[in-house]
Length: 140
Image (cartoon, rainbow, N blue to C red; front, side, top):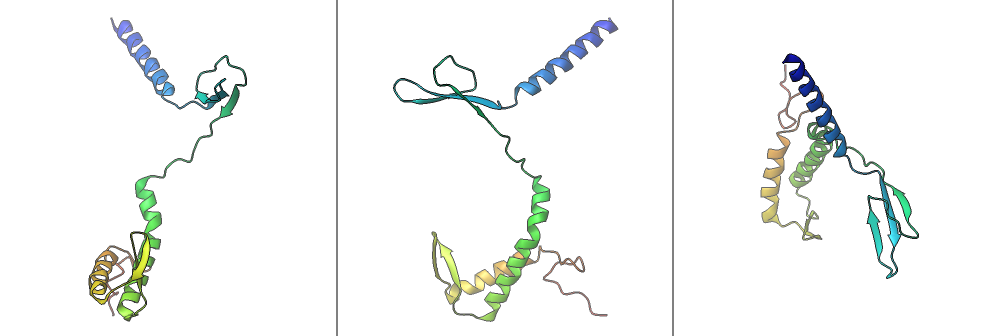
């Protein structure tokens, strides 16, 4: 009985491995143009005149979301710091992009933008002391 169970388990593992490999995308496609001028593509070889093989390259793997977030954080924090600096400066020539078009930032929009940037900046960590960048290090 144990031998049958062991053989059954081995066969299930082999079937699972085969099924996992069958989920892979094809790396070779076929392209041809029929008599009506319509271009066709297929993963299965066809018996048509003018069939050409097209090799499909693997695209880049997507990074782990946690790693991508850590890599992107310094750029976002630097941009947030610059936004806070510009909004606090009182500069009159600040622009926002709305519906794909730039326009002048109004004085009524400046305060909510500044508050939102300050709140977002609290999540940034200063590389030197490990504290959130909006909190200055303690003076000894």
